[in-house]
Length: 409
Image 1 (cartoon, rainbow, N blue to C red):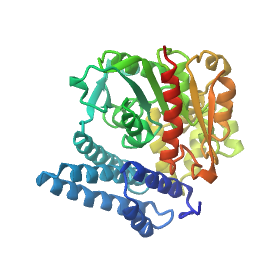
Image 2: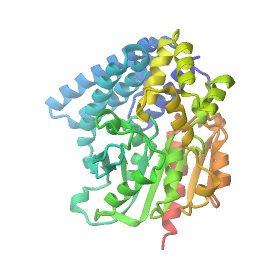
Image 3: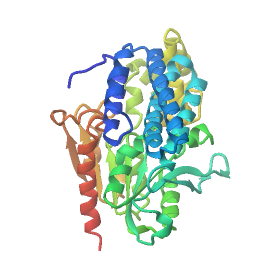
């Protein structure tokens, strides 16, 4: 495909937004106009254009709702949610952390208004979770999607758990499998785990490598519901959850199937790829003071890059560059852990995977009996998480899950 932006981050986000049109999270025409108004690589222009578009749609949704036009209000709010989310992600480097957080909250408010107007309405969830670091009980905020009004129907249905990545907005989970599940008569749910979404912004929870401590409470919660088939429960992990989900499946064995999109065996590689060898050496030597000092000096002339890096450090709960890099490196799936995965596992492998190249194939080799699903450039399905090929991804992933569910006794 021809590129529109030279900046890799801008181009990736362009594909994500275009792919969102498949599930009405965006609209192609307004996107094409917006991209023409964005200056390549200029974070301020991205924030200005997409926050302005989101505000216009938010006002449009409010006007429709005041006239009882709930479907139109839902449509506009759903798109506003996507545009506020992408503006928030780019605001970090140009307008600061507080501005990004405020835009994230507006994304979440638009999303909540939209899903309340779904038919049937999407059910907000509160999953009991114990934060060992903080020593208290903190709920994980989530959403339950169903093809029918769950409370009034006793039918137990296959259910897909959607686990987001390091910084994805909740609206992305609608196009990452929730909509496809509902179309097939299944349930779906998503949640903000430690370091993600509301768990980070509202509750101060941070990433953990032992994701089984997160997935197990989610499974426990779902198994209390009368509309969930306990024998047909699956989990999809998107982006960095391509590590978290396989890791959790090594210890949590109650699921019928798992999907890693893509496979991730070493989270830290995406961090280390930006470092010169000399800095990797300091990291290996464990010299925290020198590493932090050199990073500060090296980024002092790149305030946007420094702000972006600190934003990516927030979910790790540290201000130390050294500690953040080491925490990311600690998330690795070794052969001994992978050998404990007995759940059928589908691993996607898109052409030109830019964050964890080659790791889908590594995970496939580590997990006996796993299935590797390739997505190619010629299909329009290249790059991380197949951003512009949401329909094709749904077909392959959901057909594989259906085959697994059909085989459950």
